[in-house]
Image (tube, rainbow, N blue to C red; front, side):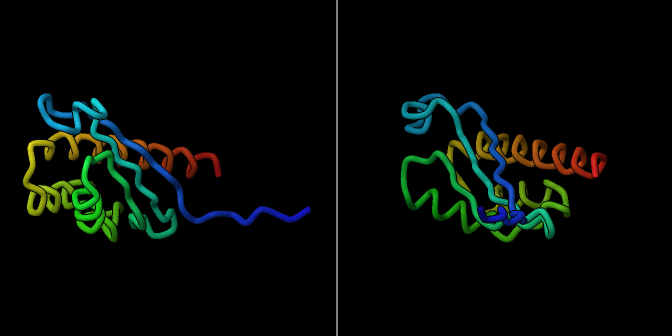
Length: 114
């Protein structure tokens, strides 16, 4: 039987209500993000969103991948606001903040239990 290798990344999700009248709302009702985060560096290494188009998913992935969450959430929010101009911008930011909060809570818990 093989030994499982300890992973250095975690998967974190966040959700917020999608703006009414948007295609995102019609299909999903929520704006969702899934982020893969390197727990050693706090860098976002991959991300996926509940967007209707592949272009929007790919674009926002490029906006946030590489961001260092140990710098706090404000810089990431500013980056999204600087590059992402859509009706769902606020919803996306809320989802990102929810995922960030979940990640930070889990990291604090793991530090106190180890």
